Image: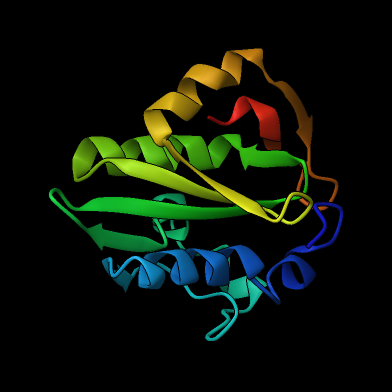
Amino acid sequence: MNHTENYNKRNTLDLAESKCVEFLESRGINYRRLGFDSTNDPIPYKDFIKIPQKLRSMPDFIVFQNQPIFVEVKGCKDILRLKDSDTSSYSFWSKLLLPVTLFVYSSTFDSYKLIPFRKVLELLPECETDKYHDNNKLYYKIKWEMIK
């Protein structure tokens, strides 16, 4: 997946999500899928943009451990590109219902990291920003080594 590609191309294969499922299942962690499955049940972009932002950015999973949490899956190479609009949505979900944790998979390093969303918010002031060329949305550039 390449951040310079359009929405349809970016959402054809989700390696990060399959790595997250592999992680959860290998540890016997109970989970349920939430949100919109862009690869197995795609919604055309012209319809997807009609859905309110908070719902479009619903976390990918609910994970059941001592306390249930939401898990949002993100894939990257060596820089995680996190949309500003998504940060607002994840804040909404974490304040309204359950904490949100990001499962971030790097294809460059063939590795994953788990980071609570509240920790991600602490990183953002240190990050550069840019805009996607296809939709002009602002995103934060979070370097892989910053994610701990």
